[in-house]
Structures are given as C-alpha cells and as structure tokens.
Length: 336
Ligand code: OGA
Ligand code: NI
Image 1: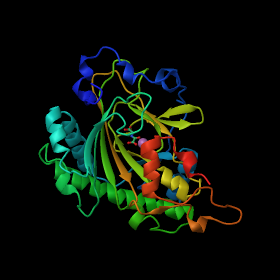
Image 2: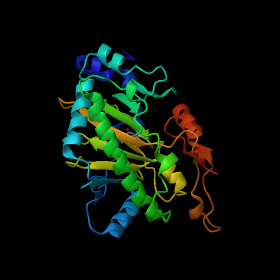
Image 3: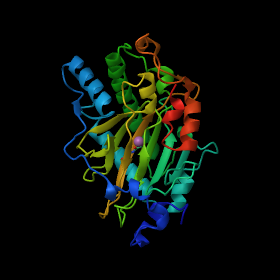
Image 4: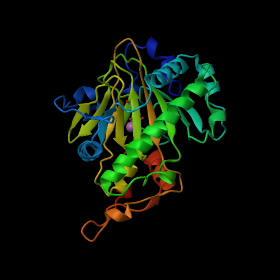
C-alpha cells in the first residue's frame, strides 16, 4: 500500500494507517487556528495601480499570501482545467500511470505523498500529477492525452496563468523598487503545474494532506476547489485557514522571492489538512520557477551598507537539491 496512490485504497479504510499518523506536534487536531485572521483579498481589476501595488507588498510582507479577484483569467478556462484534472484522478490507476509516464526524464510524473527522496516522518494523504508547462510548448508531447482534450485544456490554462503570473510579478517588482519586468526571462521561464488530489480521510485530526512547507520557487498561483477549507498559512504559532473564494486565486511568495527581496517578502510556511467529507479536494498549483542555472541572491539594487545581504548566492538547481534532500526546512542552508 505504501507506494500505491491514496485514491486507490482510501475508501477501504475506517482509520488512518499508522504510516500516515503525524507526530503529535504536527497533528492538525492539536493546532491553534487563527480564525480571526484572514489572508487579504486584492482586486486586480481596480483602477488605482499604486494602491494595488501597496496592498500586494503589504500582504506579502505580513503574510506572504494574498488572494486575487478580477484577475482576468476566464471562468470557462478555470472550470475546464479543474474538470479535466478531476477526471484524470478518477481514471483507473494503470491508465493514470500510463498517461503520466511518457517522458523517461520525468518532466511529467504522478506520485503519492510528498514525492521527495528524503525520509518523511509520516506519509501525506494525497496524490499529485505534475509536469512542466513552458509557454514555448516544450514538453507538451509528454503530457497526458487522457482524459480527451487534456492537452488543449491545460495548454490554455497554463498560458493564461503565465500571463497572470507575469502581471503579478511586475506589480511586485515595481513595489520593491526593481522597476517593471525584473522577473521576466530566466526567473520565470520553467513553470510547473501540479494537480493535487486529496481524497476524503477517516481521521483528519491525525494526518496531513501536505506537510508544512515553504514553496521552493518564485511565486505560486493556486486554484482551490470551492466548498472545502483545507489550506492553512502559518503566522507565528497559529494557522490561518484560507477559505476558497469563487473565481479567485491564492497567490503566495516562494522562498526564492524571500531571498531576492533580501527577507522583505515572506515565503510563508503553509500546509494542507484533510477532510472527512464525501468528496475529494482538488487544487491546481501553478509554480513560477527559474531555470536551474539562474543565480538566486538578494537583488543588488536593494542592498546598501545599511541593508547588507542576509542570504547566500546559489543557483536555483543547488537550492532545489537542498529542498529535495532535506525536506521543507532548508532555510538555514541559505543564510549568510
Ligand atoms: C503546493 C501547495 C496547497 C494546496 O502545491 O505547494 O501548497 O492546497 N498546495 O494544494
Ligand atoms: Ni505550497
């Protein structure tokens, strides 16, 4: 069962198998929830560009997260992508494995739990499909061809998300004082899309869907299924639940943006809890990633005698190596 997709056996369980039980300090059942706090919601369609920039920077400094509405991505594109990923995870296991294993270099893959090669203390209650999705169309030949229409639907979705990502990064770079277009090019040319599938769970207080982690990228734009609140953002010792809002995306700073901004913007810790309802939760994470060769370091224009760099320079490939082997707690490795 260990390596089998959770979706292939979860419905036979009345309790959580012991390998999925988190140590007491990580169990959602023992956590403090900050239900009085809310991740800010930013209207990207607003007239006042300066106000939008100020709100984005403030939210990114305080929480590392915000939600966006009026973001310009068509509802039918969003619904189409959510529908096709749900259909993908509902296919028989052999078919899912076949459709996601077309690239020997694994630019597309299907995995369960964290997919990391380090020893996690416990397993995670989810299955994920991920693949590269650059606007150039490279790697498209390795994407699933089932469910029917997959490639067209996901191509459209990732094209739209690429535009939205560029728009948000422009606002962030202006807000930081780096001018527009700072993140165009190498910082954002290797995007990745991940479709997460969190089946219902008989004992949500004992287990997690995703570990507490900081995203090891520049920026993440997440589409949450409506009706289930399961994503939680850490603020001090408490967890803020991120409620799904219709037609909104959740945006969070990746840890690379924390480094580039020399610690001003937060790559916040977040995690996913499971739910005991009757339906699975699905999310689509669009990861804006640099190329492996891109040097990640505090941006030179932000440094001065009064604000010296607090992080080392490393290529993105080196950072990813730490993340994959050491798990989510890789920050100390990056400090000067
Ligand atoms: C991620 C992530 C949250 C979710 O993919 O990095 O944090 O709710 N996903 O699926
Ligand atoms: Ni994340």
